[in-house]
Image: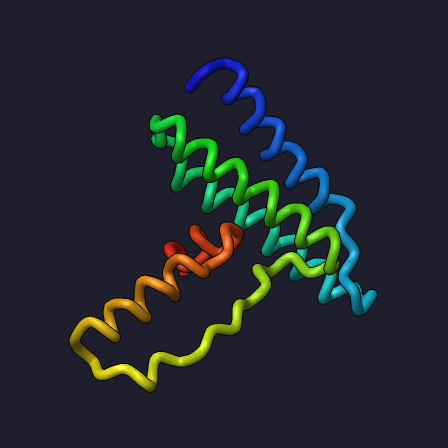
Length: 122
């Protein structure tokens, strides 16, 4: 990892903890705010530790983009949790064959960047 990339990653990590420190839940309830603050901290620690050994520059860039996207979406909607995506169910395709594989491929491609790592740790 280059020194510039390292600084960028550490800057994002600090930014997340500053956001968690100032976080207020949309409901305004104290217990809800505490729960969301704890979720933000736990999620950041989990994902950063999971990706600490990543050395591929493209993969590092993708992780940085995902982190920035989740920060922006969380701040915009005032929700720390990843926003769900709504894709049509795969009930129309048979459980094997080209149509099923094609639908699986389309679902994988259509997944937003901010949900890539969330499914891996859930």
